[in-house]
Image (cartoon, rainbow, N blue to C red):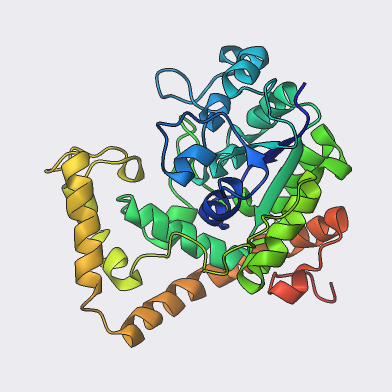
Length: 326
């Protein structure tokens, strides 16, 4: 068995890229994985092997009978962790994908536990109004064509899973891992803590994993993956299925296909965004947030209260919605 394993499961849009670049693949850190030398980008190195828990050999969702914990340990080099190092498995997809409403998150939890029964799990959450908007912008970036209401309450005929607001009821995901790994082996941190003090955030993770912080410290630069221009992305959603084919629009038969269409679409988002006044961009952002407000108040105060009780976190100080008096 490996000496120590940290399993970082996301969630999406909670600073995963920052952790992967600045901590998990920091040359001065004590974190390790078996990524080959050919993987030179830090994010790719940090994510090495994580797809074994959710992706089949054909690229489809991994079914229950397609997973073998022994094979996963071997491919990840779990029995050959260098002395004094902590193996890390990191990918936000391990928390389940929003577009499939996290349909496979329980399967992934069971697979991770079967592979690393003594592992430690890191889950990062984010205030729901903020994370919904950030995920919606990512959806538009990938060619999605729905309004934010359509994104949250998409039509469905029970043939495939569709996102619902329940996806961000964090206590349900936390409970899966607390039950599987035990309370002492699950750390839940708010993304807002990273925004306030990156060094403290990283320090908590290092102490939890049982490793020292990098002697050179942690970069105080902002999280990776800044959001796209709000107005440009919202306007382009009307024509994005004509430009590119992607999962965001059901792989529509776009004029430019997938690769070239992606380049055209992202280029339009970037360069048209340079023409948008900041005040107008902020107006669109506020308008989108106002549409999320009632959804958040209806769905998350009770869940956030339960998460507090499970973890001891004081989420109110970070702006999370709580029941009256909570």
